[in-house]
Length: 218
Image (cartoon, rainbow, N blue to C red):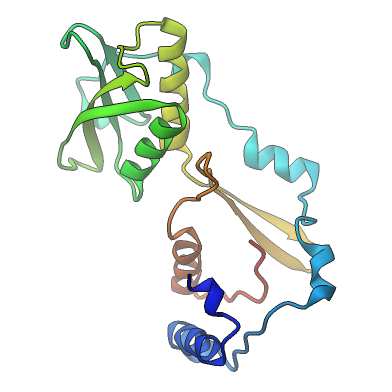
């Protein structure tokens, strides 16, 4: 709805005002205008060099990481996400016990991944963070209301969850001639919606580091 108002001068002035307030003394001037037809040819044509794309998107959990494991008794040694699948505690639900490093957007990543995998979460318990580690228990079902008993489907779900929890964002730095380019990629839902506030988080981090941005492509 907000994007539909960009053609009004008031809306453009409001956005510029907020941008200048956020950037502060680093902003000299701000102007926003609708892209003309001369920019239509640029849509969708931004591409990454193959070597950079490989580094950015090639991560896959190993077989050892992907398989369900027993939870480590010593929290101080937990460095990776750990997932246990249990079909014995409930007659109609599969229990996922997850232990992982707490991070911003953790619940969103788990819920988004479950939705994409067509998994229904009937009930969940989330513990408080202890030494940066959070424990979760999720009672889940397949879309048909049955437990997940197929070992291959269990491994696939655990692998997907671990990938999202260990790598919610893919970030690398690349040199493009005289410029330094920060590349940030994040998964999106099957519906096309992306992780919330990624752009805000990235720009805020750069601002705290005292780094300026002169060009952005999304």
